[in-house]
Image (cartoon, rainbow, N blue to C red; front, side, top):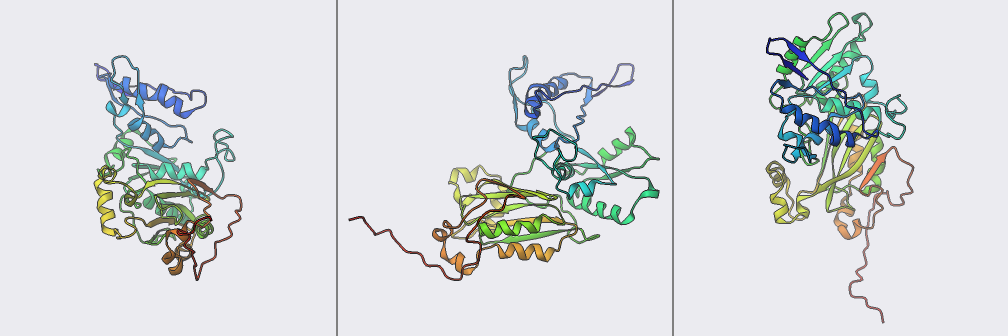
Length: 387
């Protein structure tokens, strides 16, 4: 934190907050969030800077500041730290020499020499997550004599698409970052930047209007479908998102799970699928009214009389992958006309490897019904009775 003394001199103080019992959640709840609320009461404190451990993801900290209730602080009303502080900006630092390699690999943090042995996150998840959440970027540049111009251009293309609103400052060995340069960087943060806002699964997938054209082989690939995905064929198609892709994210309509969307998110060679919340079509009227107006408006534009707002929508940031191969793989994973016409009764019979949570790469699964179906026969047993 920094402040200005009555004599006009600027002061800075660093407070170290260590993990309580090695647990990030415990440290946030017991130490960091109460500290933020107390610092707000000091009239001399103008800015608080949180310098995070390299393996911490700022999105998680921002969510905690907004959502975790801090209780039993004398003189304070119970509530989140956001009652007292607001996030002005998140700055991520990127190493020009090896960030892209880290962001597209599959090494776990433990394999890369970070974190605890029981931390199964990958280095790519952390690297991509930090940049995607940033309002401004500092690129630690290598010596110009050692720079690969093509790789530097590819890195810039990725950063401009992953964090399109973020101003970028290059730090060179002969031009280190100074306080004045940081102030200029913060002044350049766009008004529509995230500033700590955490996205929800049903928010727009392309944040900040990124460039949609290709540059140095880097581009966004979009896929949309109004038909549900065959769970087994989708599981096979996921392989297309694990090679030559920086990150992918999106909502999935799985034929076997009509009530809620699944949320897919990948970074480098690791991918996970988790619950993404109920479709509006599966909610009652009061639940729909509580959803954001933007989501309800977007759903109205694509509303189907039978299936409502159910759909699949994915985006992938590729750097060495063939966009058409990704789109073809995902299109083949959708139900064909015969399967789609068979309806929910048939869909419910399909093997589903996803459940409520799934990670890839995963152990090979024995899925017996991944082939497309050209004819479906369903016997109606509703009138049968035992003698």
